Image (cartoon, rainbow, N blue to C red; front, side, top):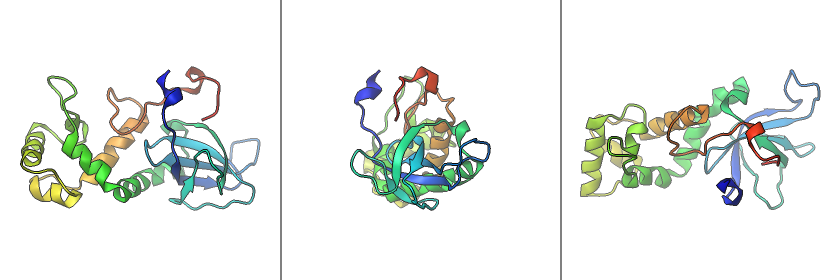
Length: 196
């Protein structure tokens, strides 16, 4: 599969830190659930001994020396998130979006049709044909420079980061035909036997 050569997440944000592991687990080892900064990959990791992490903290998970993460155990699905992780997910996704707004404003500037009947912008919750036409007309005049620029030039389109966050959560739940911001999740038995 092509995923072998794809770039991996370098940084992630902490969704949940369980200092004694999951309550139903027979082993009481610390555990962290993370979301990648680039593709919103959901991961479960073993912290380094004595490492403490707080919700929303940005941690390095790349190939070089890591300060807090000992091992990325595996990629997980949305349904494997703890209740705390699910509860923190939207606000942490919004943190990621707002820390790199250019990437997501560029999505509004550059996204194209998926097929002859559907445009990728229409996959954002609440964007129908009228919103789509307004966005396309506005960006034809001049590329968007910020989220505020989008909301000021596209009537009735409020809070673009919120729309993107909702879409990312839908993709993470795994039942979409198209994936704009995330990589589709495959069950572990379908994945090659190797750690993230």
